[in-house]
Image (cartoon, rainbow, N blue to C red; front, side, top):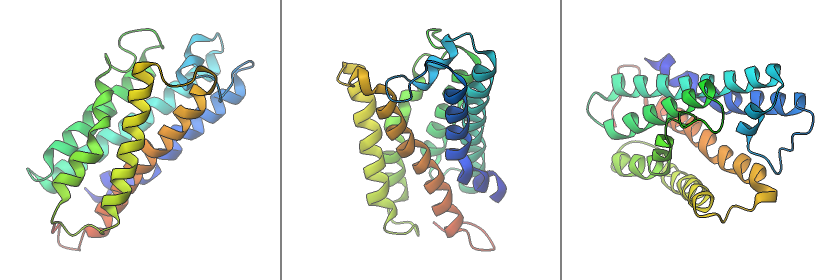
Length: 194
């Protein structure tokens, strides 16, 4: 169970290393002005395979973290774990289907990510997590929410949409790793006490 949670400490690497590598391998790709998924629209099969592997790996990491949290918590904090699993499934879908296919992102279900940090704060209220967890999580949640909202309403500047995606991805995957870190810190030798 602890290993299912601990593996998520590496989720930013699972996401960013393939994105960076695939971007370098794709000739005219710009990490500043293009979304990572745009690599799936190129004819560079190696870069596409690397990018898709990263999406599947980071999504699988979220699903494994969710399973670990469900095993740990049983019913307590269950909504956060379920939402995290849904987001993980959408990331796996990103790796299985190219951009433009409605299954890329699993019909947008990954947008549930916008509420996960806030739900997590609610579910952790009164628990033994570090008090810094709440302002860090709220900040990450606001960054994630503003990013998705600005993208949906067309306020994400086209010439910087790759950059804004990378900044939001730091908040997304950095926060997921931070969640795993905080949970691991609260685990005494005999079980979870939050």
